[in-house]
Image (cartoon, rainbow, N blue to C red):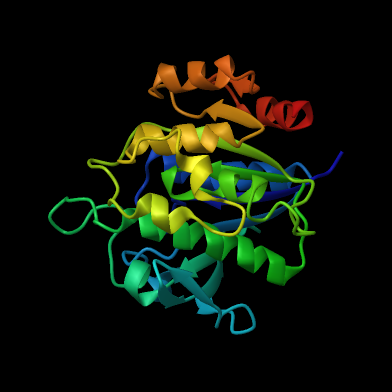
Length: 265
């Protein structure tokens, strides 16, 4: 049965360099689209992305909203492009402060940006607000990469009564750690939004690192996938211990396994 699947990707090739994460960011939506599912795909508009080469253009009707994070207004800009040689359209979440003038998770010196937590929050909320504007109701949201780790929490709390997400299932794919340091001390405070209240975050360390982000995502997901052979086994065990359906990594064709997993959840 055809489903509507929202892919929230941290990286997608060819817009950023090839990694397991960026390759899957392209391959998974394309595979599901080719299988007859209706998809929407989002990623951050990292500053390293060449807009002219990628043929990105702003979607005026979707842009213009301000998102308040840590008591500061941040304009949301939406751009769109189609991956060359495919029918996969990608929506880009952009903002001058968080994305367009920056590299990815690390700066020119290889150090994590101090506001990576705020950037992830802006990305998560930006995607969900844009999907609402599209008046599109996904059956499944599939998150790939730590930048989308807050999405499961928001879907199950802050956005749970929104018509676009009321019956949506969330799948989180786990990848190896690419963060070198903890998120800033204001992360917990910045995450709080609507029904995503402070008491829900008490169980997590005050200092969020990559593993803590993954546990946050797992806790509010309906399914968890090991999408890389080097995923921390403790995270897969964490999901299994909570009786969350899990899918082990496979070197074989992932398409059939993922489609079956979507049906399972």
